[in-house]
Length: 224
Image 1 (cartoon, rainbow, N blue to C red):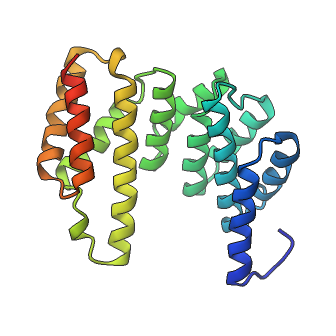
Image 2 (tube, rainbow, N blue to C red; image 1 turned 90 degrees about the vertical axis):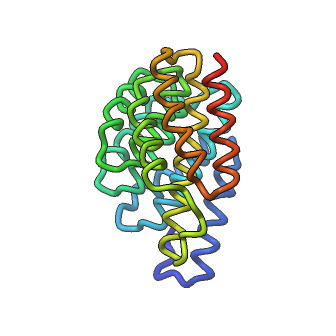
Image 3 (cartoon, rainbow, N blue to C red; image 1 turned 30 degrees about the horizontal axis):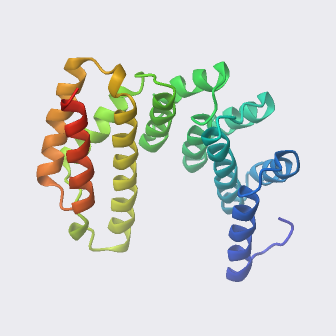
């Protein structure tokens, strides 16, 4: 953190080190270092990598059914989610979605109305993990966009369009998985409405993986 300015090699080392910290479960030692990095508001690169590491730790804890629900950690992530930086907000929304406290859930409900779609989607996915359908309108927004603007990698003929396609396809896939998690909670009308939109996506997407995943979701939703 202290080395500035950073050359390309130092940037690579920074990314490697933060990911290495994200693979450690010694939270009492690791998290204070990562929080110190997150607090460097003028250093976007450092904050991004540190939040990625926290997400790795929170994800592993959630999978182990021991969510990272420490009140101090929750408060930190809520504070980040209230900031102006869009990337930090959507990373914080993802992390809050891996926590199960009343405070984290309340913040996710607020983030469903954020101005950034990725932040809204991450909040909706986090709520879906807790079997809440509150984020369903966000999922439908993502699916409607995929139907209106087909997910076709062959149309991404520039670096910027390729990056946009990657982000859209990841967002869409995450929302598909979340809707499958919500399957038991969805009303018949909700399922029919979603299936109708997904059928358009499956028919128009130029991405074979997207087509297969979408058809599987349609089958599962229609089969109940």
